[in-house]
Image (cartoon, rainbow, N blue to C red; front, side, top):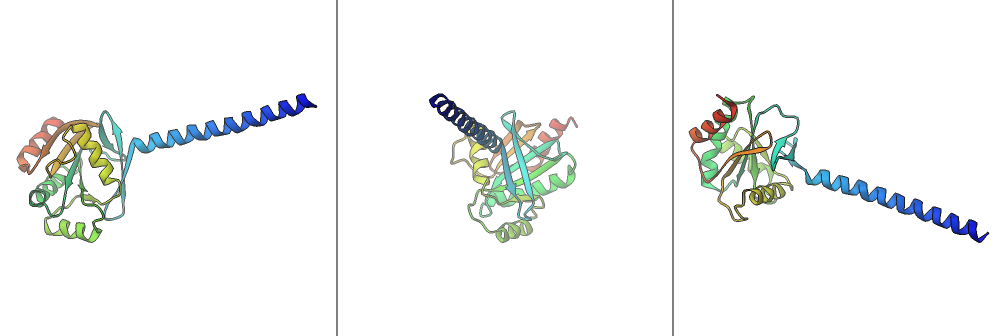
Length: 185
């Protein structure tokens, strides 16, 4: 009787710990997945999934060869000036590049971003997400530029690899030159 009770208890404990370790593995897998993906929400409520690869990012379900992340603030004059240049490049290379404007302003209303888009002709995707800060911090860490970097910060990726980054306002011709070089044009 004692052997049966002991055996039953051991069996019950092994199932309990088996279940816990399985749950732990699932939690670890979900955490890893979350760590390797950043979901950004555009002002239109469309979601964009950035995947971390090759120490950079790719955009899930995108055929664009180059991902351009524009880290900006609506109150920043160089950011305002650069917006129309990025929109021009997005239009010119619409099948080859994807420009995503990432606001560094916490809790900014979408209406303010839409007003920025209209006033400065920022006709590309603007994201206003709780994940913006995580993305920006990750980029700053990888670029080794610290937390107090200058904006706009423009970061270009191809196939998840960093092509180039610019701090501060940049002329459209310089950005286009790097795009052409990356595309082999």
